[in-house]
Image (spheres, rainbow over the protein chains, first blue to last red):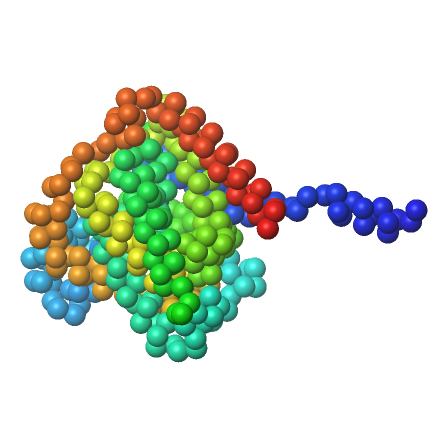
Length: 184
Length: 183
């Protein structure tokens, strides 16, 4: 018996390694939740602050009066607060992580989209834009997004969080099934 | 324990946000194909990340609340609005390929279509603000449960529900890993 044979046998006997990365990242987000609940009393969330940013953008384009008179922006006025800077941090953290890992690359059309819908950049951008509109409109109506509602409300066992997850995933799966079904 | 406020909190916002963005990237959920892979039931990364975050976060935050170091921040459950909104969100997330948090993080990893979708998100927020009064008067009042938790509606103690969640999560993860090994 040579060393190579033993190694070969061991390779067959050892089960496929579990990829721990998603679990570690998830656990990290869980621990980050402990920290934000205890230190700043401000659960992780994205879309409330994005609504405030949208109010700021609207004020620049349409004037302060339009925003001041709006019933929604009266509840969520534009100000550079914790939530808005959290968004800046989210972008910066992913940028730093991608640069450090060497995975930063400019992507206009992702692989799975290209396989199904081809090389048209306007087509992909139109879908991304429309998807962005729906995602934000839905999140505001539902009371939060995957982060603010799914994770932050979900971990508190809030009805709103689990209702969101229970509806969002099946609808998304059905949409993907329709969208990615090859035309006959 | 009093929460940190004012200018120190603004620095912490960038720090905690950066940790969140880096974790999303390391968990690979800043990748369009990972997200779409979940909705096409080919890649269970999104479920792994979210379920682990909810379980680990849920147990820790429960402990912090019990010890008096944190308070719960439960939001209103307006059932019709949550169901309709989540359905719109599900369609949008598949078209966009990201949710709001992973979309912002994906811009940082170089995704141009994530940036275009983020402009769409701003447009969606503006659309919501301008239709808010109609939504508030017609949809939000239907099925209003207040700041309800699963404990409130089931009558079971939170700790029992958390224990159940752990059992279910372990079962789901075991099933996913077993299937992936067979594939």
